[in-house]
Length: 223
Image (cartoon, rainbow, N blue to C red):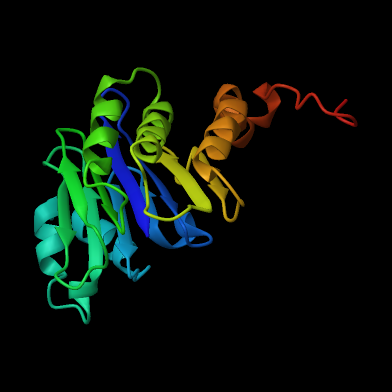
C-alpha cells in the first residue's frame, strides 16, 4: 500500500524521503529524517515508532544495516518494511516475511526505494533510476523519483496521499510537505506544491535565523 524513497546528498549533507500510498496521511506515519543522522522509513503494516528508533540507533553509531538488525527482536517485525540511510554507509532495506502484496526494493549508492502491494515489481528500480539521473536539489530529485514510481504503476490501487521531507543543518525540516488526502494523483499534486515552495525554501530559513534580513512575504497586510 506504499512506495517510497530515502536518500542523502553528499554535497550538502541533506537527508530526505518521499512517499505515496492509498492510505490517508502516509507521510505522518512512515517517513522520518534527522539532521546530521539520516533518514528512515517504516511502511507496509506500519509501526510509526520504528522510524525514530532507527534514527536513534544511527545517531548512536550503528550503520543502517546494523540498525535494522537491532530491530529484529521487535514484536511483529515480520509485518514491516523498513529502510535506513546515514551519511557514509550503504543504505539498507528490510522486508518482513509477512509483509503484504507484491513487494520489491532497489538499493543505490545514495538512495534506497521500496514498495508493497505494487502494480509492478519494476516500481522501485524505476524510482532509483530517476533519482540517479536527476539534477537539482535533493527535494527535486526525490520528487522526480516518486513521479517515476507512479508512472511505472505505483501501488496496485489508486493512491490518495503523499509526502516530501528534507532536513539540512537545522533542528527542523527545511522541506516538509504533505497531502494527506487527495481524490486523484497526489504525487503530481505534491510536485506542484513543491514547485511553489521551492523558490521560497531559503526565505523561510532566513526568517527563522534572522527576521531582520528576511524578505517580504508579498501578501496583503505585509508592510
